[in-house]
Amino acid sequence: MTTESEKIDEKASSHETEREISATTPTKAEHTEHAAYTGGSKNGAKFMEVMNAEYALALSTGPQLEATSWRSIQLFMILLVSFMGSLSNGFDGSVMSAVNGMKQYLDYFGIDGEDAGGGVGTTTAIIFGMYSIGSIVGVVIAGPITDALGRRGGMSIGGFIIIIGAAVISAAKNVHYLLAGRFVLGFGVAISTTAAPSYVVEMSPPQWRGRLTGLYNTFYYSGSILCTGITVASGRNQSTLSWRLPLAIQIIPAAILAFGAWVLPESPRWLISVGRDEEAKKILAKYHGDGDENAPLVKLEWKEYHEAIRLDASDKRWWDYSELCNTRNARYRTFMLLLMAFFGQWSGNGLGYFLTILFKNAGATTQNQLLTLNFVNTVVSAIGALIGTSLTDKVGRRVIWFWGTFGCAACLGIVTGLTAKWGSNGANPTGANAAIAFIFLFGFVFSLGYTPLQAVYPTEVLEYNTRAKGMALNAFAVSCAGFVNVYAGPIALGRIQWKYYIVYIAWDIFECIVIYFFAVETKGRTLEELDEIFRDPNPVKASKRKLKVAIVDKGNEKQVEIVHEAGNVAA
Image (cartoon, rainbow, N blue to C red):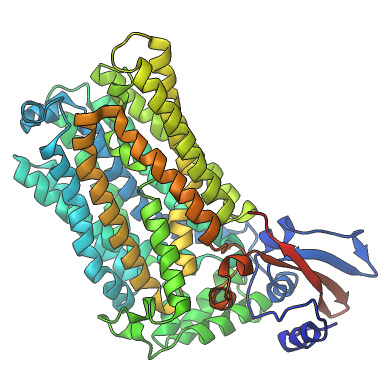
């Protein structure tokens, strides 16, 4: 029996089947949800299966935040401000799809006459693609800004730039204004989406990290629902207000982010990295230890942060990205980050920018029909995202990622078959309606499988010292992949229509194979243990390993004993 990590290591080394445990932290939710009790409490000992032992002990002793406490509510309100970065991104991701189906918008900019089919073709591709180009340029400074000025500074600067971009496009008099505004919007979003998810993962208590960071990305659909709901109403107006109003409303969440960031507490990890330890400890104790600086969880995290954060590391050199690829460990982490970036854009969701075109291909005709279907799709997708967020800390990242991708391929396959047979020719309204239903189902499945992970996974696979620059690289990769979607998408849909879906089906199958063999499970792990996992000859197998431990109450203290290695997590 032991009470400290050193004794845990002694115990581990004395048993052939036991492995050494590093100072890492499975969450309370995780060690409870994966618990395998053997006869309840035996001789005062509670047996459970956990991803690591030391956090199981820390979370079994001392104060923690309760979900319904006032401090938890404060924390959620703090994170809600940072969620505006995701909401702004979601609003923009839907607003162009919606206005691209409005006759008022197409006529005003002369797009309808130039691009065959209305809203599909080269001009539309350039307007949509300019956002991605802005993002690609923006990520060059996103990492350095977030490292130098803090997570709050990055969120605020990104928010102010989004305000400028939204003002330009909502007042646009010609296509050149649209192009300039879209570029500025993409530039600002690149900065805000580098800083905001880093802030969320660093402020969240470890037991809630997966769900809160997943909830950040789920706010994409809050922006999407807000946008599509507004366009359903504004689309009935025959003036330019029909499209100017939704474009202008993007300013509101960006303003909340830009101004609100400065009233938030700074990330404790960033504060430690710049030598402001006292401020960091107070914030960590308040929001992770319910105000107690001596809480076991706070002490464990404090030790880990100082072991992980190097004050003279390359994160102080804005131009140095070498730590993303200078070791096998770093290269595997970066590989995981890039997989999520590209797979998260190329699993079929890129078609979402052109939902009105998909609905036309499936048989919808009137503008009101198209806008209403767009709104319903965002609501269905939001439900999927919320369910996915609730599952993130329960079933693990790999399981959600693999089956979400498989489901995307299946749904797109059915949509392709139904659209090909009963789509725009109107020969079978029932078949066309079924195609639309499966477009909705695709949105639901993609959102369940990818929306929570797109924010959680990249931040989890990165070390602190590479997080800001890694998230900038993530934004760069997402923007490059997105540019392919928005530039190739309208041209391909205009020329080969539903046959374009087949490209995504084949790619999704390829993604499933890659995820199965290479994706690392990050649930229940923290920086130090992930470092051990990524150094392992087989990171995938190492990441799925669990332990069976016994926690014994010995009066004033609780002790933890490793019983044996319990095997691997499924999938």
